[in-house]
Length: 627
Image 1 (cartoon, rainbow, N blue to C red):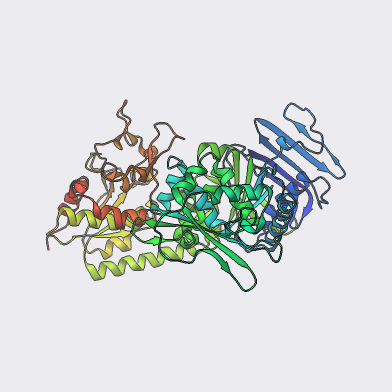
Image 2: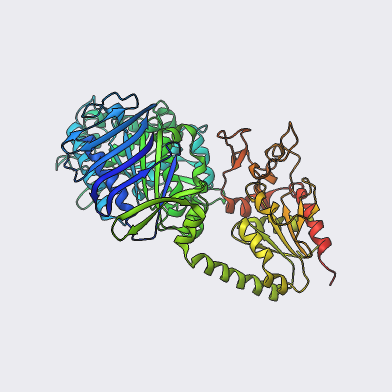
């Protein structure tokens, strides 16, 4: 499913004769612009268009052209009130109403809460779907696979999405990734479901667990069938005293049900991930399911419930989950500023988190993401983005511009201010510590380097200061800074680069190799300065082939895939890494939580795991003048 072209003929809010072209191949298209430009109006217009496509009687207020590819066919739709001018790529006419197989199955909408129009639309459609379920709740043949056309996915779906994923086979790629991202070490033995008396139940009905007809307040048809399946899941024996069973409320009634997680998982194994999600969603929508929860144990040993994960942690989980759940369906996902309320560190890694979307999911879904954050945009993989600006007479206009220019436009002086604050912090550190600096591009690299040095030279004080510099370009820029060099008072400066796209920054740092040995860490020196750029050393294990072609023995340079976590590949659980089948060689990418990895996993390793760092540390020590 890929959008190719949109033309709003006429006007919708500030979209006047608005045209937008897509390349037709990308999973993700990003729309950026300063706050207040009206990026959300584009998403509103898409909702209006698809409301009209799904129901031709809907009174849309503008004409439009929409081209997209679906199922190998290119569809060109043109609504010119009151008639259609539609065709396929072979010029065959497409009659109205458009056949369902020529339309997206679902529109998935992530809504961060700041747009009343989108919020009201989602609420209205939720009410429509609730009415539809209510009309069919006594129908045993109701097709649960017939999901709602518009899905508003937000915070209220956190526990359902995560429970749906955890109930899948341990072999599921999505489950492995999400457990890594959320640092889930193990899943509890029970699943907790809280049911509540639905609006359609008679006033005098109660939950009678001993009477199958009165169980779940007399639910009938499709709902009785699925609820009985849940009821028949085995219990865990010898559980502690707790609130469970029928709970009377002042104006309602609840029933707390605990069941075996493993038995629930086994009995629902025949259902696809989509079926499980739709089942839970329908129970929630009709007012029967109030809560679902599973206790999980984190890598730190702490036990928490599903709802306790922060929104920052969960942001990418929403997207990864819905794309996987709906991978058998052609979908368009509208993500309206999903980064709006994230801490800058979460914004910075937002697009990194999306690299694990499966190939099947990426083919069936087209993600449209709006943002006004320069920090989020930095890690977007494409070189150009759609930049929105308000024009005095034309309204909102979109131009494809280089990502770097878009970042500058969005940030103005914000990034510059950050760099100035960072510079002051570095100078302050030099004056206090009077030690050489080792700049790193990763925020957790200093933790790992300190641990490594303490293991290898346990009786020595670390003779340098590892300092996080917010990416490889910042590392190179700060190392070249004349003020920093002057303030070092003759002490050397070091910078450490990953073996990936950072190679280009390293390679352009200087023409003068000081050490040209991949196994010990290649080093370049800034001419005439005690300033050294270092690449990570390449280990003699399976990771080496991600840096050096095993056939030609040529280095992949910027196409290499090796971060500091890869140096521990042979010493940690393999689930910290996932094979990337989207590029040749299927390199293993690190998918674990970097903070948890550095704080909890690395300190638990044997000393042998840190030997790879010894030549690099010896080099650093050799360059530090004696006191």
